[in-house]
Image: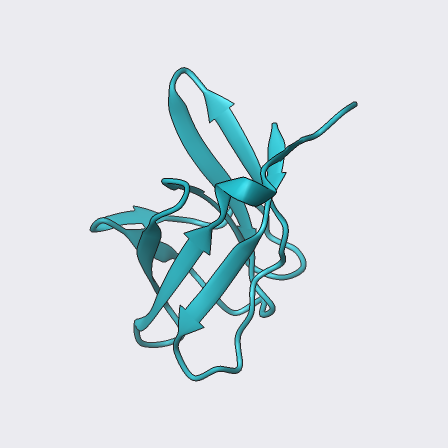
Length: 98
């Protein structure tokens, strides 16, 4: 488990995501725990796959597949799709100690 700075582009400019984000590497797959600044997002689309929230209280939170140092195109529901780009900077990757 790591943390990584994430930047958000696109949309109306009113939404934001928590940064740094939690990055999980397991079985060769990299996922990010994305927490939005709004509780109103019902799902995220990444590469045409739908991801539902991982919790029901607080701001909308999703766990999505990502690639470090590349832009990740996502779309959010509310009530229509809004396009965003997330970028995870591997230079800021830091292991989470327990």
